[in-house]
Amino acid sequence: MSQESTHGQYVPEPEHVSVHTVNTEGSSFTPPGDGGQQQNQPEPAGQPPAVPPPVVPPPVMPPLAIPPVAYEQMFPAMMAHYMQHMAQLMPMFQPPPQPQPRIVTFKTLKDNGAEEFRGDKMGEPQIALDWLEQMDRVLKNLRVPDADRSEWASQMFRKGAYDWWKRVDQDPHTPKPWTWDRFDRAFTKEYVPTRYREERRDEFVALKQEGMSLPELRQKFDYLSQYATSLVSTPEDRLNEFVKKLRADLRPYAALITTTDFNAAYDLIVKTEKSLDDLQATKKEDRATKDPRPAASTGPSGKSFGSGGKRYEKGSSSAPPPKRSKSRPSPSAAASNSIRTRSHPQCVQCGRHHLGETSVCWMFDLVS
Image 1: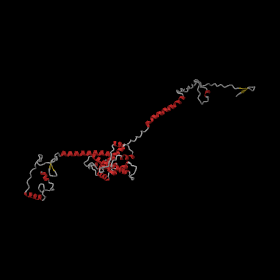
Image 2: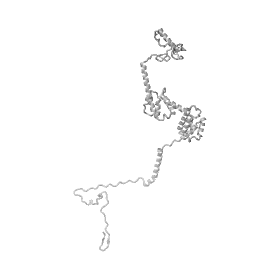
Image 3: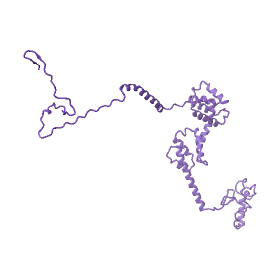
Image 4: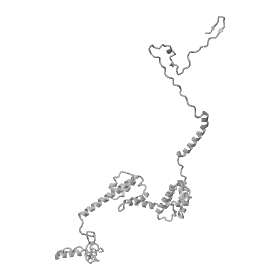
């Protein structure tokens, strides 16, 4: 409060000077929240005064190596360098470009194996089928679009084939645009008659292994199966048809195969056939060991054969030893034989009476 003098004059209060100085390293530390009350508490007698913990000065940040103004000037350059680096990395993550379609010319077709087709051998439909297959392969290798294949294939037509193409292409009833499937059907209908396809189909149905080897059978099976697509439409049907055409002793073993993969099944059939052939060869050797020299046999014409199948001829040094002479029959037996012999017609070659056709005389062959 301000004090007034007795004479009514204002006297300012004396300035309050704090006895507390700024904390220094040697000053005591007063924990917050105590309100300064702990300083007024007397220290217990006989105990040393409490030493306050040392005050750690705040860390001093070093001055920036680059002033803030320099950072603002360097930022655009850093961003430009970053964008340039990313632009160099972008080609590594981009997909490869699509291959460009090749430029097809008549010379390109010829160089890749395409041949001209004249259509002058109507009696040989296989020539037309071979040409169509080769043309399809060439167009696929050149990656010609489906819409352009028929046009390029027609460039190989000559003479009668080209006349047919103009007639079909200009026909208003022909469906357009041309696709390869439509071209295939129209070409096959013209140059591969139905009769030829039916004959090949019948040949496929009647196909049997018999004396063919397995590779020969498979080659013929693959060729003829294109004319019987309804019989080999699935892998199971194709394998079943092949098993039906195997030889009789191999067929039961092949029917036990469970896989539907044709190549895997074919390999198993080849191994089975080899095992059967080895078994038959072993049995044959065993029979030959038990009976190495079989007795001479008589052929259909009555001629004698030795153990090796060799025929003994009259006057040959290798003729078999003469048989023991038998006793002559009695006159009555000879007479009965003569009567029995004369009951047959006389042979025109040997003049005797014997069984069999008169035009085939085994006795004449034996003495000749």
